[in-house]
Structure formats: C-alpha cells, structure tokens
Length: 421
Ligand code: NIG
Ligand code: FE
Image (cartoon, rainbow, N blue to C red; front, top):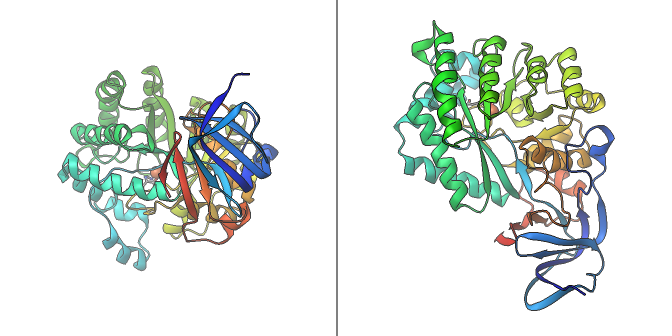
C-alpha cells in the first residue's frame, strides 16, 4: 500500500461544506448543491488536499508526530473564500465624501465635479510604491482574517498616467510574491476618462489599445483587462474596442457594467465572451439572457449598492433562474465599497439579493474561482486541489451568514499552511 503522510488533519467537523462537483462555474440548482458532510474530516499533505470524507481517515493516510491535528467540533469548514473583484491598491481615502452622500449627491456627480475616482487618482499618483504596498498589505491581512485566501485586484487609479497604473500592478505582483494570499491582477486604465481627454476620450481609448495593453501583456503584469462601461464613462463602443484588443493580446476580458444605468453592457459582455460581468444592477432582460447563453459569470456587489444608497439591487434571483452562474464580491475600493469584509457581503447576499446560504457559499468559492479562471485549483475541497481551507467558529452554514457584521473566522489555511488562527 502506498502511504501518504498528512501534514494537517481537521477532524470532527460538525459541518463540512466541500462544494464537491464539476470544476466549473455552477448555475441554477447546482448552486444549491454544496456537498455537505456531517462529522467530516479533511487531510492535507504539504500544499494539497489528500482526503475529504466522513469520520475516519483511510488506512493509507498516516498521522505522524509532525501532523497538525485540529479539532473542529461545533465548527463549520469551507473552501478558502475568494474575493473576485477588488480595487485593493490605492492612495488616500475618501471619508470626506460622506457629507456629499448626506446631501444626496450622486456617485457620478461627485466624480464629474473632480472628486470620486479622480481624487483617488491624485492620491495614488502621490503615494510611493512603499506607501501603496503597506496600505494594500493591511487590507489584504484584513481580508485574510475574514477567511479570504485568493483575491483579484485591479489597477485603475493612474488612468492616462501609465507610470501610476504600472506602480499599482507592481504592488500587486510584489504582494502576491510575499503575502500568503494569492492575488490575481486586472488592468483597468479604462476606469474614468482622464481630465485632459474629456473632450476626446477616443484618443485615450487609442492609447490604451496601442500602447498600454501591449506593454502590460508583454510584461505579464495582468491576467485580466477590465473597463468601467457606464453612462458618462466609457461607452459600449469604446469598451468593445478596448476588450477586443485586450483579447488579442491574451488578456481575459472582464467588465464593470450597468452599475447605475442599463447601457447594454450585459449584451456586450456576452458578445465579447467576458469571463465575468460585474455589478449588473441595471442589466436588461435581453442582456441577461445573452449572458446565460454564453456562460458569462455575474459578479454581484451588494455592499456597493448599499453604500451608494440605491434602492435597487441586482436581480440575483432572476439571474439564477436564467442559468447565469453568480459570484459575490466586496468590490473593496475607497469610494463605493470601503470594506474588506466578504462575510458581510455574504449576509447582504441573503438579505438584499434573496440568495440562499447554499447559493451564497457557491458564489464566493467555486463560482468566484471560475470567474478568475482558477476552478481547477481552488474553490472546492477535493483531493488534488490546493489546501485553501477556512474553519469558522459557527455551528453551521446558515449561522455564518445570519449572525452578521462580526468576524466568524477561527483558522485560515493557505496552501497547506496555517496563516491565521
Ligand atoms: O466598482 N465603478 C467603478 N469602480 C468602482 C469604484 C471605484 C471608486 O469609486 O474609487 C466600483 O464601484
Ligand atoms: Fe469595481
């Protein structure tokens, strides 16, 4: 018999949510099938999962004096959570905007008056690499404490100042090299029309296509390319051009669409074959049907809707009914969702998007993994997958989401190493 030596064993798990199933985004009823095991047990060897089951380990898995054994009675164990849409790296903060919010000034109006994203662009330009690194590291630590083991992070606070865009991408790369949490980079120079291109935004689009995208692709600085497609920001036509060029250069397209108004962004995401379309509060019926057909993942960001004080949330129920795989994320950023707390987002997913706890956990594990093209490595607890595991100090999945606003994390294991407990 071929023996394996367990480096970590988590035993007596009251509720083990494995997400066992096909390595692809789950849709419709599949989102409710979470592979729940009572009295579960998980074994890890180095950075990989070697066993997931009930009660006991099989005979070929050996416990040695070096094995870390963790008792998870009365606890919940899930795959490491994945925050698949964040603006992790930026300078300054925007708490002064709270007074505009109190007056009812709209997000885009704050931005058009030179605040919002433009303010953060100035602060990010001014910040040194080290300052940006330290600030992002602090947020990344917080995310990890909430049970997050993989994060997507975007540039987008340099715009036409390419040096600042690259500074953000390099911070992401260095954090990914040094921090236990894995970070996947997205290039988002198309986050706002820069001041000096206000009257000729097509020129900026050309610069993104001919100069920036080729450089980012050749240097391997990002896996994805994103655009903020919204009324008064980038049009559908401009977004199409940018994302088509990105595809040609081997960057996978993602898109911020229909966050505030229906503009035809969902339709565009389907037409281009984006891996995900994010926000989608105002997405049209036609756009959603096209997304379902193409298998575009809908990444929903309910704390953004909350923070923008909007009444209308994305129609998650309809999306699930249409067969669109849904992911949930924080959208962590200084203006529309200043929170690193993915557990809070999960609670909002239930209360505001009317998703079930089972759909919620699918959306922050396997579906979030698929939205980052990482479904073969992470997103479920199965033999051969990376040992990214969270133990929550709650008796069951429902409790995790129901008792909201506090941190339920007990232990975080990343690539087979206990990184938080
Ligand atoms: O996803 N919509 C554009 N981007 C972010 C907000 C960024 C900011 O306000 O700094 C979002 O909401
Ligand atoms: Fe965003």
